Image 1 (cartoon, rainbow, N blue to C red):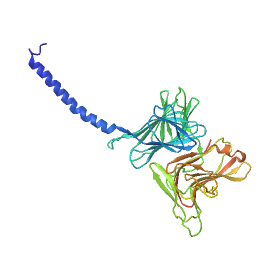
Image 2 (cartoon, rainbow, N blue to C red; image 1 turned 90 degrees about the vertical axis):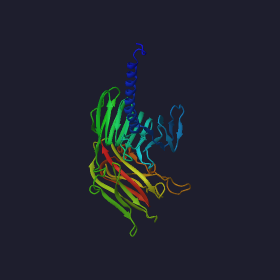
Image 3 (cartoon, helix red, strand yellow; image 1 turned 30 degrees about the vertical axis):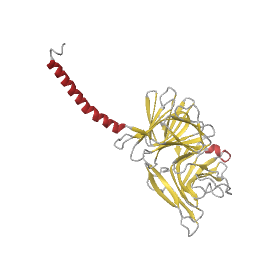
Image 4 (cartoon, rainbow, N blue to C red; image 1 turned 90 degrees about the horizontal axis):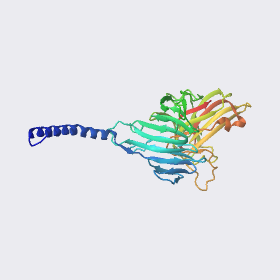
Length: 407
C-alpha cells in the first residue's frame, strides 16, 4: 500500500496507535507505580552471635569463612556453620528503628544454614509481610518468630527433604541422614514435600524422608506442666515464690505481652545488695516411670542483672529452673539450671558460673538434654514440682512457653 495514495488511512492508523499507546500508558504507569509502592522491598538487618565456641560465617560468594567469636552483621546469601563444639544465634530485626526482634534461629552443634532472603516492604503503604527465607543444609535449629511494628511475618525454611512455612510461632527442625523432623512448639506451620502438604499445630510433629511425603502429624510428647504459656491468670496452677529478708522490698511478678507471646516478668531494682528470690512454681506429682525421654524447654529473656555470673557461690542467676523429683530409690532430689549474660570481672573471687550464658535482651530457647540420661545414677521415678525464678540482688528477666515433656 502506498501511503501517499491513502493519507487519510495512515492518519487514522497513527491516531488510533497514539490513542492506544496513551490509554495503555495512562493505565500501566499508575499500576506500575502502585505495584512498586506495594511490593518493593529492602533488606533487613541480621546478626549472628556465637553462643559457644567460634562460629564460621561464609559471606556471599566467599570460599573462606570469617571466624565469629562474639557478634557480627550477616548479609543475604551468607552461610552460617557450627561444628561439634559450637552453637550460634541468628537474629533478624524488624525494618524500623525500634530494634524489635522479628525472628531468632538457634543453631545447635554441627549445623549449616544459609540466609537466602531477609526482606521487609520498603513503604508503609504495603500490607505484605516481612519475609525470611532460610536453607538448612544439615543439623538442628530452633526457630522462633513474632510480628513486629504492626506487620506480619512469613518464614520459609527449606531443607533437602521438605519446605516448611511458618507465620508467628516456634519450631524445632532437624535435618539429618536423609530425613527432616519438624516439631511445632507454638503457632501453625505447613510442611510440604513430594507434592503433599501437612499442617502442624502447636504440640504436634511430623517427619519427611527424602523423596517422600510428610507423615501425618502426631502429638509431640506429653507435657507435664499446666498452662506453660501463661494464658489468663498465673494462679492456679502456678504458685508465686517471694523470698527476701524482713523489712526489705521484694521482687515483683507480673504478666506481660510481647507480640503474641505471654510471659512472666521477674523484676527488682532496689539497689540494696540484698539476696532475694522471686518466681513461680507448680506442683506436678507425676509418675514418669516407663518413659524414655524427659526434657525441659522454655523461652527466656534477660534484661538486667546486678550480680555478675552466678553470684559468689554460682547459685544466683537472673533466671533459674529447678525440678524437684523422687528417684527410683525413693530419695527426694532436685536438678537445676541457671542462666546469665554478665561475665565475672577480671580477678573476681566468685566461683565460675555453672549456668548457661545467653544473649542480653533477646528471647532465647533453652532445651535440656534428656534428663533421664543426665540423672541416670539417680533416675527420676516421680516429678514432684517445678520452679522458675530469679535470684540475686537486682534483676529483670522474663520466661515463657514452659514445657516439661516425657515420651
